[in-house]
Length: 222
Ligand SMILES: CC(C)(COP(=O)(O)OP(=O)(O)OC[C@H]1O[C@@H](n2cnc3c(N)ncnc32)[C@H](O)[C@@H]1OP(=O)(O)O)[C@@H](O)C(=O)NCCC(=O)NCCS
Image (cartoon, rainbow, N blue to C red; front, side):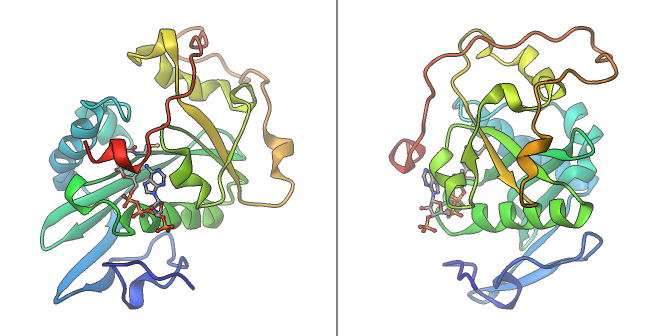
């Protein structure tokens, strides 16, 4: 059982909420924090949170269209009507999903909320039958604490690279690819094989790699 400093309470003792579950209340002092599926009225705050971090080049920016198209991928953490965090689980193949757009409001980082949101998304992955959850990140240390391991990016689904086509770092990709095995031996599902169907956007090309950029807690407080 894990404690979440600042977010301790009955709703935060560990994963286990159903995919359809409603709000998960937790005591935060005298206030209440809820982790729930995102809704359209959350979009403006999600854009502000994600693109605020993206403006510091620590994660990919998202457009209103992208957020709305994938809204059902997202969980949000809300306290007293204020959106404190969000994160998404996006399916790619019958076996693999990406954890993406995980973000916590800067004034609420280091309180356990990022870990809790990621844990909830991994629990959703398990409930949906996902075998491997992968991601690209500048904070591998954070995800190592969730049992993600660095992997060869060529082992990730080609479809995953479609986000890269519009990334400002396409010509010098410095993110670390990581994966979490939901089921034992799931690495057999990791393959460089191209998707059966061509991408609607046209052929994909892979980004040019650079030395991984790793943001630790000191840089994140800039
Ligand atoms: C990365 C992020 C989601 C972490 O959320 P958070 O709420 O600050 O993290 P938590 O408090 O849950 O931290 C959980 C653990 O990870 C550690 N950790 C947090 N950020 C870390 C980092 N950048 N590097 C290494 N370890 C980190 C914490 O110290 C804590 O360790 P502990 O359990 O031993 O105390 C948040 O800092 C953020 O939104 N960053 C900007 C956006 C971003 O980089 N998102 C990731 C996209 S893949």
